[in-house]
Length: 467
Ligand SMILES: *Cc1c(COP(=O)(O)O)cnc(C)c1O
Image 1 (tube, rainbow, N blue to C red):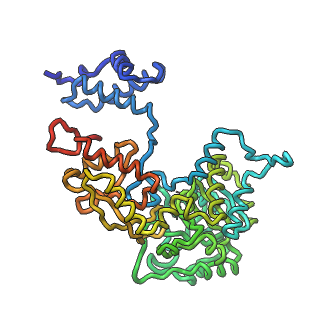
Image 2: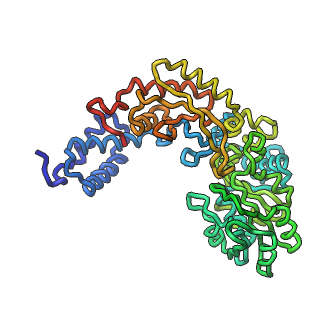
Image 3: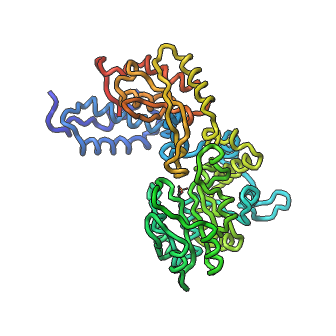
């Protein structure tokens, strides 16, 4: 019989330490003992009457051992969402990843010119590449686009008014809300127009001596259709220019090539926005740019200079690893090789025939694994082209090998590498567009596990549903 007082079931620290060593635990006593004590006290709080001393001990050891491996292990993205925020957004190209590894582990001339030994130049490479790719007079890389927006608005508009369309005072997700960012910058938001229709005249009426800027915001993760009107960026630029205020365009994803080339319309590219007359544009570097996390502010030199000098700029500045990775990513565009080198663009540009051919090869390599080929739609994600899709191909395990969808999905997630996929109509869908072809061999190995591991067959005894 198990005791009804859960506290009596809790193993002692020295017992757990011994069990941890027996299980191969490598952390020092000094590191592991506080973890053990915390686990025991949390087990005491949540003590479940059924838990035996052995099961509590086993669970604690599992938790301790998990901390010895990187939590951010490799996962294949079979979700069909190309820029998946929960999976870390864009994958760096091989070249960008190498440049980042080198910058991380070496001294690099971050702020010295090796030819003259003069100080400076942290941002020069990014600035020149962004000029080459977009025509922007100047540019600055910061921690992410949220930081870019906060920094730009704080510098330009603290204590003043910023005009935003009611349809664009949006929440992007992950806590980025346009009204909140504006409030944090010290600017007052003046929202104009109606949720579905805003005209240039609405902005014009709101301008007064207190106005510092007009802010245009990419709606990112939603689209409204039907009776809608959006003021053209060219008109807003002319208005801002005539009134001597700044037009800021938060592009979100920041397309450096037009996804319309691949049938996904409606994204204003960075160059289009600047050509239309935006004074400043801001965008992420880990969405459509396809690099590591960062945020770029590009546009008029005198504004970028003011922004760079603001004390907040230092607090949100990019580190050497991000600078190296973003610069290397931008060089792919400059060489005209974005769609063959940058994973995000490779995924967008993959023709459906290539996905069908890969599906055939994978299914042929797995004769014992029942896999159906299903026509699906992938999305870009990361707030780009909301509501639009790319035709794609998914592999879907048949009911014989994935009779319990939840169990099979869990098993795939916990494989090594892991595989995430989506479910629809009681089926698991593994979208091939968001998995790179060089990873197909690993995918085959993971899918092989579906028939080798019994844990997906709920009718078999002794099966526990993980996590
Ligand atoms: C994603 C996004 C942001 C936030 O960018 P982060 O790089 O994630 O900080 C801001 N504005 C828009 C319109 C976005 O789509």
